[in-house]
Length: 452
Image (cartoon, rainbow, N blue to C red; front, side):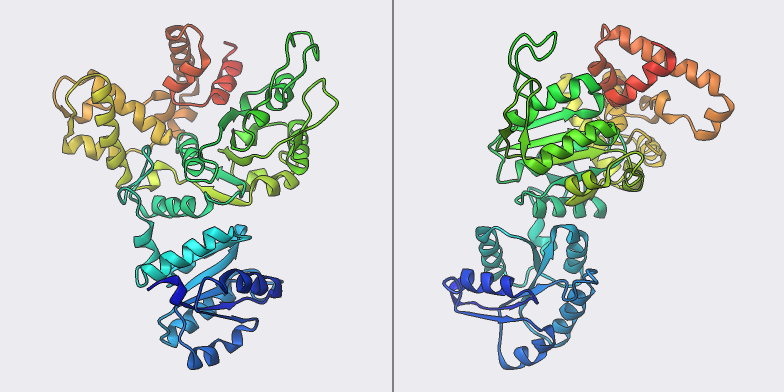
């Protein structure tokens, strides 16, 4: 069936939304019916046969829970309508919208929407009517999103679906999760599946910027603005203009830095250090932090008005220990990756090795698993990895109780390990942090702690 032959019902209590959809779809479909009061849905379905129903998730603005949408979704199903239901939701209700898919909706659209995107959604639903949203979601395989982001667990499938839905919008995304969970990969996937994919993608580890470098690095500076400013420099925001900027470790910036960043996001302009005239910017903002949303909500630590600016939609990345079979999936992926890198035969895993991986708590998450497998591939003699070939970092793996009772020994071990890795990389902090499986910011903290 083609969209031109489709009959569409739109139910929303916002008259402006109904008018906009009617004007958009009138030339595109055979019939468009709009309704402000959801109570009239049963009588409309009794008199008409619709191919698609666009259904708002909230009809009482003071409630905003999506319960009204769920109620009418179930009512439509009870009336045995063959119509595919597409939920209309706001940016902040993405989790509710995903829940609606599990309860029978075919898809959802986020308002305000791009007209072309809405028409494409309806076209896809009409042409593939009867398929579930979960089946429609598949990319190259059920476990892969892009080339690096892997996962077959339900938690990761939900994240993949959320990426697919939010990527084409310009919504600001906050990615939450422990260190090593893959927040940067998710940011890259959002950019690669966005309408800005062909434009610049700029990553900044803002948690590692000192107060003196913060403005210059992000907003640029003019020649002579300060002692070492020997020439004009374009800041990261301007470098990302028309594209995406990813601010990593945003939970670690100071209140003063937050104030500067908030001003830029509100005005969509940057003023380079030493300049008088602002420069307009058009960027899609992605942020990540290992700080929980509850901790960010502490105004002594983070400005709430900035949280609202960066958190139109949040994506919470689960720790590896909660991803079940993904541990084995990722271990095999890394084994093949590093076998190719080091020109070795791709190894198999013995049952003891798989059991060791499955029973480990992975405080360092995917990053820790990655480097454990890399070491195993390098050091193993045979083509089957045994449990003894897989060693975990002593920095990450010490149980909390043991750390409390043997604090001095553990700290000495950590200090010695950091010293050894720093010497190996001739003081290069980025490379040292990567081998240790921690962020540069975490490494800075440890350097300060041990006076290194």
